[in-house]
Length: 380
Image 1 (cartoon, rainbow, N blue to C red):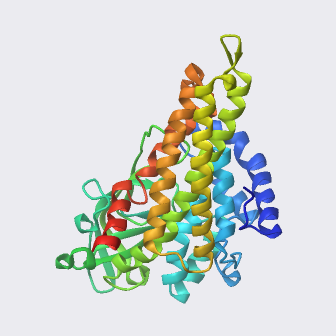
Image 2: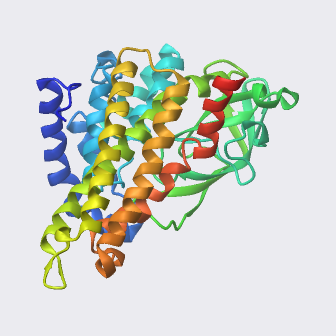
Image 3: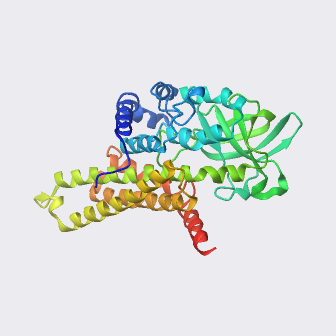
């Protein structure tokens, strides 16, 4: 089915993203996977290409384009290329809204130009060793010391954790406030007491740096409070729909690309003297995955349109996230199986997609949390 949601402007942007990937990303990605981190140069190149700060107002150096469809195009093309190293989606679509929507004028002028030109890489630090989806379990604390906050605690599984110059830290500012006693504090590179642990060794997304962060008596200036004091819970909930939709966009794009690769493979690969595609079981497998992808694509595209119009709610974003990522997981598993032994070799795209995509059902809210959100909306 021909997609109906993009205009010629979006397709022109898609071509520019593909050109960027071919020139600045794909020739280096294998090396980044070995290094466990991308070069800072690719971030600067993305800034020069206009791929950072798409929705940031032009006065701060951004693109001034709040149409989420451009972000969707960017996410789709990086997913299709298997280029998970440069976490542009995290930077643009997850962290960007906090800075533009909550930042003071002084904060915007201080941080957004670097955010847009690639000289200032960002991360958000929410997860702790003992607290993931449950915000009430956060123990990182910030004590009011008059002209600054004194921050103590640790975070883990932080994407961009090694490269980040600016980290939005979710910390407890009112001990007795539960999830409602949390605030967002911005910690900048080089601040005394802010240390990075090891670059975590993951089963996939090898080129994307993921780190432990430690805060020991870190003095955070009062002007680095982002948003309202004790307002982090509401701020986080407000931006989760876009985060989850972005993950869903990646999920369906990755599944579709795996299906394309596998369809070509079974046409070429022979068994028992004829192509695999001539076997009824193989045709049924391809037919099932193609149908599941087509149905999922229709729903996710509707969510993209709704979000671009400011109408996507948390429930439908949760539906998109859990369904598209679980489909991605199933498709990756089935496509690897159809590749046989070659599917287990890391030189094949399907093998890397199998491990890279496994995190999709976990971060941004697990599948189980998504179902809980949907269930509560229906059953109270």
